[in-house]
Image (cartoon, rainbow, N blue to C red):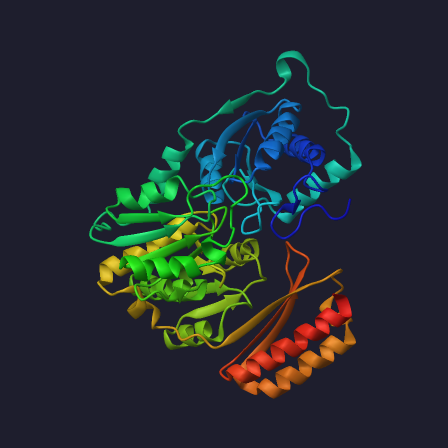
Length: 449
């Protein structure tokens, strides 16, 4: 078994290492062992998205946790941020999410939240991994009444719905607004329609019939084209696309145009600054954010800093630098004044609150940021050597940067969760952007494909 934890927990093809029932059981045992150091509370929340393999992983984790004398609280299908909320709300020792986020249904994953609702730090993941691989706790076997129990929390969804609605201003409603929701046949399929309709919106929902195998299947935040067409067809004021586990948002304006995470960050940053809520006048992003985002921040006189790619690293920098707003171009937006992790539903509520309060349509709000043309090519790779250890690639990147000058940039990096190298080029010259991206992608394919 190779490295167990990646940038967002454990992830892989379900029923293949490391996402087997056997390894999940060991992860459950190790997580329970770490949690038992805390006094008085020996309970772990388990939730999942709608993948068919969730049943297998859920039962294996439950068995492992109970075998260490820790109780399990089962909440069933629920967005990842909902499980973080329930973990903290119920004062549990930890929360475990069974999900591969935006990946296809055949994949699955395990990520762990601390009892404070934040994702566990790398040091805790390293300790859990060490316990799994060394079998140091193999002989710890509580018996009789010391074995843990599993309970189902039937009102978890209701609690999360109230939590989300409480982030929407009391003096506003969504009355008179027609919304189209794309739930990606994933974890938001129950809660999202309830939340937006209870706030007064006329809700049309698509991709809300999960069958275990259609999660993220050409729908949701990764594939907004169907939603874009539906917004135009129905005359809706907005479309909201979530990913499979509900922690990211891509919005569609009333004209059927897409708002990326950068747009949403820009709109919310301006509003929060105007209201005196943007702590330290700072927004945290990643190197994947578009040039247009940084130009908009400069015009608004808002400071920016870029953390490593991945919402856990954005959050880490937010906490270090005292920021309350941060996120990624992909739609992971974190509002630390509302939640401990990225939440697609809460992000949508903040965006729609600005729309309702300003009286401006989303297209007008989004005009504050102009996107620089970007070409992103995902290259499947057989290995992941350090980018700077490939001389031919380093030379090609330097040549591309010289050609772009100050009017563009190049970013070549690996995905933290998939066997992919991402090649991204941005500039105001669309033809140049495409040519350089394709040339670099071809070189990556030759060298490590």
